[in-house]
Length: 201
Length: 246
Image (cartoon, rainbow over all chains, first blue to last red; front, side, top):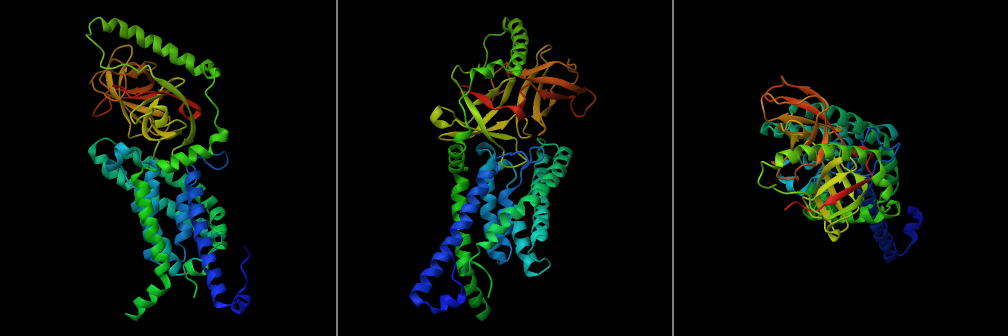
């Protein structure tokens, strides 16, 4: 459905305007949800060209960063918590739930940071900065996981040295592929942004 | 107060959406992503194919049989002294196609195209051409997730086929595992074949696992060996799932 420009909207009766707004709102929300579903289904795929050495882009993280840009910190962190839980559900074996790292901490941290970053206007919203933000945030998220594994290594089951060698590999490669693929998801999503969900005056 | 009210007017909608998302995510977390497994399985259906006989002709299968024969011969001589085996591989088995990999680089998992409707339960054993691959960790009606033996959180009680030296094999996330011997001075050398031991509570005895690639007897606190898995895990397309050992 083409979105009428603001001038022509003002000419319409109030009830029709309300309906249009309402439609736009649900379309935007629907697209966000649809994009999230696509991201979840992309997670277990290792397509040639998409993954480097068995490490694929972290699509959920890209979605979260894209959502958190330009949003209040509270909203972003709640969504971070939700995405962290979703990522846990996709990876953690049921029998190990209580004894392995959760994605929630990392996701809450990066969504909050992303929301703050934009507020301070350190970075503009363009092709390069989105890729850079995702690169940095992936490193932070993977490090948060590695720190949790390090605490678990005191139980003697995991090897501290191995965790950090793995952290270097995972954080770097994952940040690289996620950063490269971030604009692919981010730009369609920003195009579909809707006034009511957005923080524009 | 006015500022709070203005913030509320502006962001109440977003806050509500985020809270609804959080509630949905909690429900999703409790279901351990089984809806996601189902949808993923359904969408990948066009790329799935039934297991073929040709699979049995693969080179890795021959290697598995060779390992298994050597293991059985050793076991046979030991059996005379034993009263009974703790448990053996179930006779019920099914082939399943690998349709996805782990959703996170920290975990070594695969997603397969059979689930609880096909009789698969958590704890079932997955083997592939070449030997042991992993165990089923989660199931949904038509799909399940396998925690691979190459995952750092998986540990398998193993035995050196030739000398019966016992150890615990842990994944290293990169196609090799580290075998920590229980004995101070184990009788093991490069090239020895490793199989699951009768002391393993999660795996049946005598499944081929891999081969010792290098060994470090001076490692503290226990001697260690690097083991390469006999199943070519990154290249596998099918796994055979055996019902959970009783």
